[in-house]
Length: 241
Image 1 (cartoon, rainbow, N blue to C red):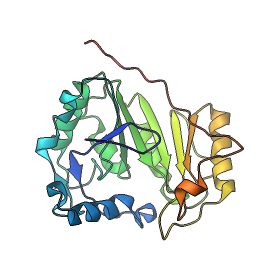
Image 2: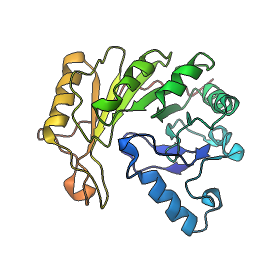
Image 3: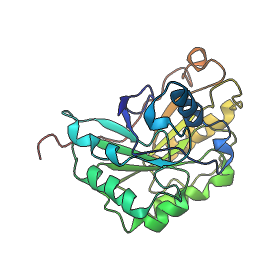
């Protein structure tokens, strides 16, 4: 596990690492770049760079955390990758079920596999399930997410590379929006962001604006409409259990 600079979480936990590109949002994957960097640094967990790898030795890490955490699960992979066995996913879910004092944020682009496995998994209150929706071409992922039993359902529209008009936000609790960052970052139109923010406001859905992105994301900042948007769903942590 590691502390995280991602604005909407506190730390990351990676029972799997590595992935494959499946849609336009994956083109300049930050995790792939980071995995190659960690491989070059000689970090054993990334000896295969961005090839999908399962890490049984990482599954029980949450039992060692002494205070409640907000945790992004698999920041360096996708738990619902087609080559991750259901039994492995169940082991990860068991650990999340068994640690109700923490909030676990799971994010996938593979909503079809998520939906397929959903009924096989135990959705305890502390598991937030999200799908990545980078433009209108993949908006069907929202419908798959809506059919799961996750208590908190969220969308990550990052990198936002196109408009997403008229999102069906029924049953959705939270939307994160962010621009792509890095040397080859694709531009994000302010109107795309404002439209999603207005949709969330109308539907009474929490809205979090993560960043404008670009070559220098720090300089670009994260101010929208003259303010920052840091809204998140209510967090229920169980300290004594």
